[in-house]
Amino acid sequence: MTNWKKRLFYSPADDRSRMRAVANNLILHLHPTKVPAPALKWTYTWGLGGISALLALLQILTGVLLMFRYDASVERAYTSIQTIETQVLFGSLVRGLHHWSANLLIVTAFLHLIRVFLTGGFKKGRATNWLIGIGLLLLVMTFNFTGYLLPWDQLAFWAITVGTSLLSYLPAAGTAVANFLLAGPEVGQGALRNFYAIHVAVLPALLIIMMSYHFWKVRKDGGISQPNPPARSRVTRLTTIPHLVQIEFTAAVVLLTSLVVWAMLVPAPLEALANPNHPPNPAKAAWYFMGLQELLLHMHPLAAMMLPGAALTAIAAIPLWDKREEDIGVYFRSQKGGITAVTAAILAIALIPILVIVDELWLDLPALMPALPILIANGLIPLLLSLGGLAAIYFLFRVIGRANRGEATVGLFTFLIVSLIMLTNVGVFFRGANMALVMPF
Ligand code: HEM
Image (cartoon, rainbow, N blue to C red; front, side, top):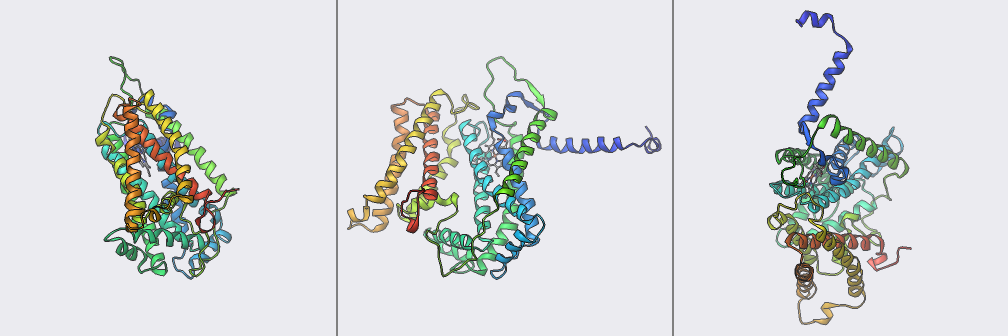
């Protein structure tokens, strides 16, 4: 059709089809045109990567809206949050959405990591994306940590004071990093300004870059991991539009609706104005750092940071260790891997509370070894005992359980994850005044 004819026979339907073409184009930039049918199975990925992506976008959107009214000064930060809550149209809803989706994002990114690990999604050339993913999880936690200070209430002030005081235990650069972050030795105006700049400029830029790379890499790696098809059989491939898009759209609508309802029913917390002279008792870190804070009650801070550091390094190095490609896409690697995981979970659920109680009530390593410096008695020794215990669990699976390397790694990974969850629960629910063990009811 020539141009003048096009203009003469213009109809709104043209606009619609053009919009559809643009939308389709966008979708097909993110996804391949066809996806293997098994990849559409909801119970393979649980949609956790997509849900995390949606939550991250919601964070940016609601965060930008909050920036219009938030004031990063110690005199006005708290009142600006009160104004957002009480005087700005939909302010409380926007803040609630920002707060709850931030917390949920930590959970979904963490669950996504677990899913990827359990299905061996880091195999067959996906190691880079595994590392980028770990970076993304740390980034999401840093987002939450820096955002925590901004309301400038008691919760914010003391959680950040506790959190940043840990940094100074890191050898060599610890104190310098803490002073740089806080713009001085303690939490004050400089810290609020720095945290705000990091929260609204540095981290979003990193998030966008890393997420874009993460998505691009999923496509570059040939889509998400899949179980190897049986010999000589071919996997059916379905078109992304409408099959995958329908699923993603439904999940997005359900998630957003639930979040809006939740944010309307449960407002984001805001405690009394920060008072640097009056710490709350107990002064707890944010819930996602409570596992670490719990460790600190049992060992020297340096050891309490080295233990999760070592675990994280080992998790990052898993693609170098567990390379068997035959079991890719199979949850827990095999049935035996499943049994190993359940055994490890039961072990952690039973062992962690026992260790916490024994250490709290009876065991006092520095008193048992008065001749040794505290760093050794309460640092090096518990650290080596913990690492030795983890190694023993791995070898028990290998030798007694006759698990192969991948299955035993599944067991060890499950033990670590369930231990972290147990420690976090002890910290959140079972610690009261002076961080003493209490019953939560
Ligand atoms: C903001 C956080 C994150 C977002 C938005 C995100 C997003 C996604 C999406 C959309 C996918 C496609 C498949 C799926 O939905 O499961 C994916 C795959 C993948 N992600 Fe993430 N991710 C994040 C964090 C992580 C973390 C914490 C890890 C692990 C350390 C990770 C490692 C991977 C890997 C290796 C794949 C390929 C998995 C496979 O092929 O089975 N990601 N991610």
